Image 1: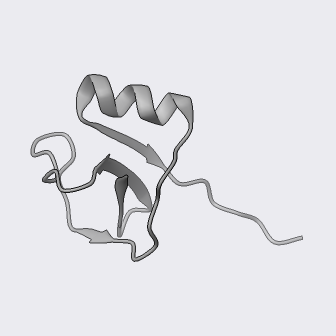
Image 2: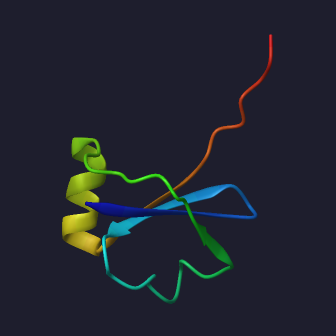
Length: 64
């Protein structure tokens, strides 16, 4: 299980459920998403295992 957070600059942060938000390069005001996340991609899972978190900028979606 994973906790997913977003911030005002449209960044996505994924950490293991129950782990605190890492301090340092992942600073800012984070808001936890209410949806439960049970599985993630292999890339995210490996990043969480090695660094303790996964972070990336959300893509801006353009409407057609």
